[in-house]
Length: 114
Length: 490
Picture (cartoon, rainbow over the protein chains, first blue to last red):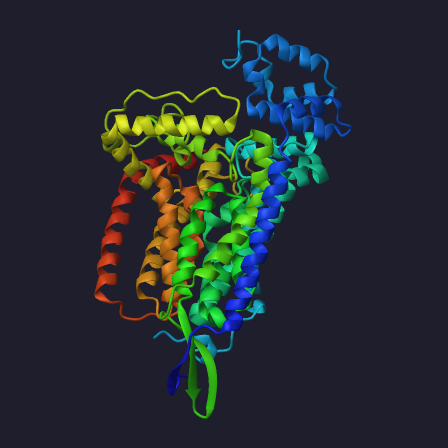
């Protein structure tokens, strides 16, 4: 059914604009809060080394080790240092390394410092 | 002035589409997919499928995600690994059948929004029977999960535009953004949709309030197409998508000590796509070696290959990503002719009538009933190959002729341009999955008779695109013949 008449009424009602502004403000605040909290929670490499050795939760230890690898922490170090670290680590880490980062365990890997 | 058909009454007077109407088409679609799942039960998959399983298993076992892809699909696998152990892949395949039904519902609802019940039903049947999409239920790729988020997001965007800025509920745009964010957390390349969709929202929701009179009844309605750009709705949509992705971006900062919005898979694509290799995963293993896709015409278009470059051995994947993309760009600058010619081949690969289910039928060991005979496999493959040109051309005709479907036409065009632009990096048939349901919707509108005589400029565009797409299929004829021959001999 086509309308008999279409009459322009006017601009966007203030209530709609107010509603959109409220949503935008809420979203922006959430983004800023989440971004700030996230930024402040980023650990240093030293923090990660400690966590990978001492955290109570084995998953936390593995996550810290994974982050060290991904950050390229071991790239600046010799293979011997990495080996020593692994020997002194809780048992989850060698298992994790063997299953998920097997390439790192090879001393002739391209990225290792000689 | 375009009027909102729904705010008046359905144009054809038919009753609206009910979910119960979809039981038959989508039920048959589910049975088809279950048959595929049964055939693939117990198979392990190769390439990315195997990698996804390994990443999911590792996440479940050690609590750490070691991959470079978007996280939601590996996370889902990790949950299934925890619950079902070695049976995780098969359990997930069965769940993917339900995901396909869910995606089919949204495809039908989009068609219903613009063409009524008949179009919705046709879209549901097309979605149910379109084999290249059905195949993903049985494969361990992120596409099934992706469509579960992406299609509802597209529906919400289109509904937003249909309802207008005043009548639409406040959550409509943010919900669309949230769903698109989840889709991006499933497939990283979805990020390229966010900004173009924001621009689309700004244009599609442009309008002003009007009063309409039908007989004695008067009511306020939204008149599209006039007034200032709808910047605020566009921002709400974009900000919500950003907020949805942000927790993972923070995780990446924690992990890489770098800004990585979602993942670093583009670096892998640049190593393959912006390089001298001729790798096409759809026709993997058909050439003499994996780095050499077959096809005489492909070779002729590509011309002589320059020396390839090697990916960097850097542990920080974010750094490796930057370096590899930069090396890929240097390669493109040093070999502009080859780069442009190889982009044509990437486009050809993306548009190819092949599909990933055919690749998996060819290279997966241990496929069982009902797909274990050469005859069934070949028939399935021939049907799947024919369905791609049928849906693409029908969708193109639907796009050109669709009546009263302005927002759908413009959003489908926006998403298609973004999808095809991925071929500038690397092209394969899996990358066109986001827009295929929209082609199905547009084709359904055409078949449902929801069409008008298109203006001249749209006719010219239709002719040009039809010729271009048909030409793009010619180099794929050789590889298709080879793939079918392999299946016939299997």
